[in-house]
Length: 64
Image 1 (cartoon, rainbow, N blue to C red):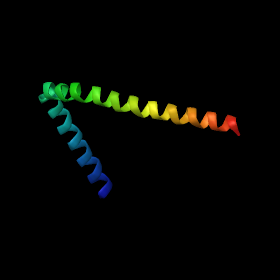
Image 2 (image 1 turned 90 degrees about the vertical axis):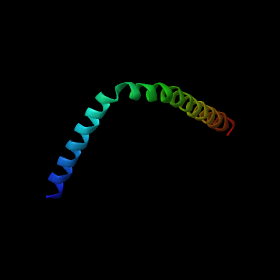
Image 3 (image 1 turned 30 degrees about the vertical axis):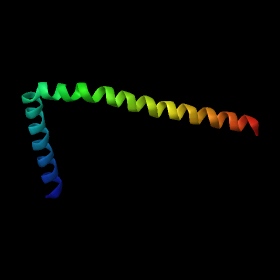
Image 4 (image 1 turned 180 degrees about the horizontal axis):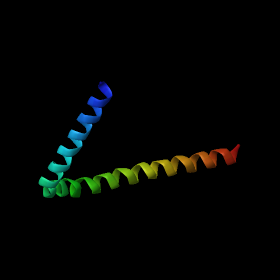
């Protein structure tokens, strides 16, 4: 009975989320406009650090 209850509750929450997304579309876009630049900045910083770390590893392995 637990599996069917999980499926039912998941379907209900998905439906409610869709209805609220449609009802609050402009608020959702407002939040998205604020979040996208922050996500891009954080992703860029992570990629930069990963690239620097990989470059250090490559230079270290060439020295050995």
